[in-house]
Length: 576
Image: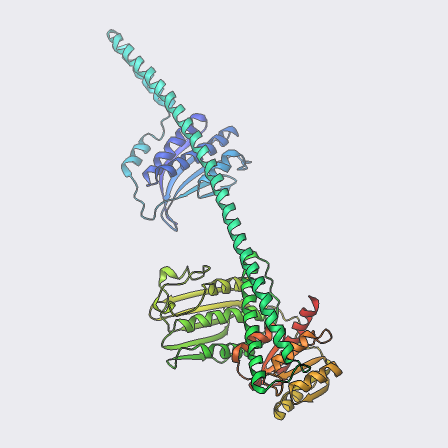
């Protein structure tokens, strides 16, 4: 830190305080501060000086200019008396008017930031230094001494002496008038400060009311949308129940598509409601162990259909050995899906790469999404995290969106105790980094169950699932289609259900929907076994409180994680 001393003044009584105020304003002018800031500096010094005089504390004021780290005018008041507390109206005024106030037992430093290209008026400073030791009383004494010497040496010039005395009297009246003017100015400044604070309070109240109205609107419109969507979901579930009228395969397929689309729309509405909750600070994470391989598979399946053309490749790096991650999986998926969707929207050629790695801290994990898209100009990068803001560009015209994605993603990252950052270069690409704490695993293994039900048309898949359930389920019941799985579930009341997403006669999503309508079976842990993620399968599965297991990744470890996730979801559902 580089400091240059500008002026030094003693402070012992009220007259010194007056001079301190005057010199403070002049030094502020010398370092380029505008008129308002000159008054702020002078007022702060005057109030602090009066507090010191009131406490009978003598001090020395040193004005200096700091060049680094940030250009600022420093006024250090040093004393040798202990017990100065820094409390009182004068200190409070100084804290409001100055950018910083640092109090120590033997002094205080008042800081006022100046312009980075500050240019000091050396001529004005030279004049101030030459008169640094003079006070108003000293000047008066000097003039009186001069008058006495004149009387002793030039008695004949009494008329001139009278004229000089008259001038002195006029000067004194001018000093009194100046003091009154300064007092009036101080009073006006204080009134202006009070009015400014009142205006700021009023504006803050208006902003809080506007934010509350916006949150109420989001919450209300989300609730209004959920009612008809829930009706659609309920009606499609009724159409899919075994006791309903028989349907053709095409009709059943169409009903399944309606059910899946409605569940996807319901999940989107829930995201909007979550955004309102996050804004209000009422969205709480549900932390549980996360299977990152499952999350990566889910993200890949949901992003691949969004790619514009064969000119863009989605590259997912192989997962390294990472510490266990305990966080809210739904929030994690929403953050990464938002980031990946943005990368897809604004990348015409090249690749989108997803990487997970440990660090930067020992208990942290980083998720990095890079793309070779159009990039973001530097002056726009801070705005992309604002609600409803969309960067103007040629691709934005054809890209759907509300401008909530990155704002919502950053809120979720902060709720999870992490951070979401962005760096970008126009015409080169963008990198978005999500950093999360690993957390602690509250439930390392799934709870054992007495009976598990497997429903899958592929006998080989059933065998792999049955083998993976060894040590978890005492008894395993199998069937080849979804309809018989429902009948077995009602008669056997299993503690765990694993059903294929494409199970014959009745899909896994339809089976899950019916189970959630049955009071006796609505809290049974359910695992949907599927291939890729057509039509937002993962979204609808999570919306109905189940876990998703990729068929291509069946192993004792992945099945154990999926069962554990399903049991945790069932516990939360039962607690509601």
